[in-house]
Image (cartoon, rainbow, N blue to C red; front, side, top):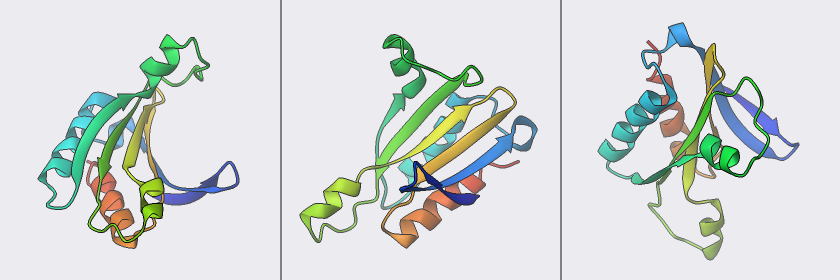
Length: 128
């Protein structure tokens, strides 16, 4: 798992797994595994799945040729609501993208260190 900056301002955590490194065989299987972890977690609230690939395709938008599928699982940790500003950084999502020979799994850094650790642990647990 590495941390990187996207578009010079968004801090992301990201990992690329070769398809032989992961025990799941599709974006849907990875999303399903993450969904189980989220639903079983005592704090995280599952929200939904968003198919970014299909949405972009339906808009006749641009999709890189190597992207074969791309979905987000949307959820919220939400253990506190100290200020209205916290709403701007919720909910969270993890993206899963199929690049043909590998999967890229990523999320935007949360303002809560424990939330980041939990998301990293969930993603790392997907590895075979």
